[in-house]
Length: 468
Ligand SMILES: [Zn+2]
Image 1 (spheres, rainbow, N blue to C red):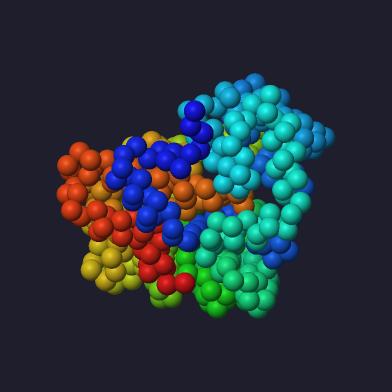
Image 2 (cartoon, rainbow, N blue to C red; image 1 turned 90 degrees about the horizontal axis):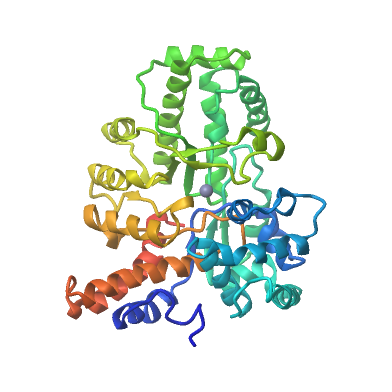
């Protein structure tokens, strides 16, 4: 019987196998958006055991365990051991069939550790011991794992106040993988909570050495930090937003709104939206001036379970897909920048798959011939980076834009063993294109061009687009 994760996993025809094995599989990885902790790379973190490696911060696994009736103490508990958590995960895995974590778990076992066994309670102990023994070897450190997967560039996610000390140390040391910061100024827009915002303004004042007392000085401080990020090699910004804001506003209004929130007073929804509109616009200008790419991850409704949010905090597995109306404000936002001749390269990631066609066509409105695929429909994100989500994103992009110019996959992960998700994506891509050839939708004579196209989407397009 064939192994589950065999050479032809997800590849159903001769052409799909050729495209994957002869082209896409050979390309290095550019992981242009992730949430790795740079200190773990700088210090070359070692992992004690498979339980720690897999369950320390993985809210995908925690959600599956909770849905399987596993007690919270085995997900986020401080008193349970890594081994106990792993055993509960192993017990859950057979119940996750058809959920992407089932495929990812076995892809990671195979590609990281060379383990072909299927994880379940009867194999749990031997898999735990075998993987844990391998983790003691130097090539299984954070850096070792990055090298193993031929990673060339990673972009982490960093706040404007971050010192970037670990990025700078890695650069000075000459570490062969580029570990670059990415600019994520969400807190500078979060005026819903005046108390938190004011504290953030103090941090930003300290980091920039600029006394922030007005909207103008806030922008000045952000511009100084933006330059600092650029000097550290940053080429991308990223915004985590529920939806876009593109209200009309005057500088005077924004100045007054800033003063109000910075004195601790609550703002109205109108004022919040005006402030966010101004901020998104000004931040977009900074990105344009530096030649960066701006990314927008929108559409998540976060911290839905307030009881568990109070207990466990954010990013613990209680976020889901929202249904915000976006097309009109997004159009206005992009149009105002385009009108001023200041629209940076842009990637739009929607979390609600019902927005796929809207985003694919919206991107087309602002292609201006200055760069191939200047406005990108981003890869299937978060709940959508599974076979159906990836396939649907690739289909919408193909049908309404140019798949060939797509900058491709990213892990968006906190883990050093998520790189097989690039393989997972590449196999789906190659299978889709190979299948089109088998069915006569693409001429078989163009197989070499298709091969290069899979190489481009896997690697070359990202390399050329971002200019690292
Ligand atoms: Zn992210």
